[in-house]
Image (cartoon, rainbow, N blue to C red; front, side, top):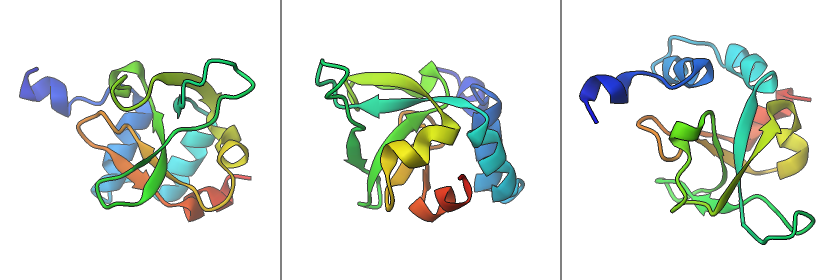
Length: 122
């Protein structure tokens, strides 16, 4: 993959998250856009939809996180057997309190959002 392709965001939310990483976007804006977006949430792959639950993995800093991808380009079947679309506004209810989220774990610019980030999502 060329360096230019790696640096090109895959979607508007990915672009905004990358801007936030370098301090060129406000987290309030990220929260608003995420709330109005559909993302893919990593699941355990337990088969029965009633048994499905978010898959938790450790981020590079060792913190246990749920994983979301802003586009199929950032999903990795080696990280999670299943990815299912969810509304960003539904993430706090799906994940519960105290769950950090690793965004685009298979992408060139993964970002961990602390659980407190979602406190303003209600």
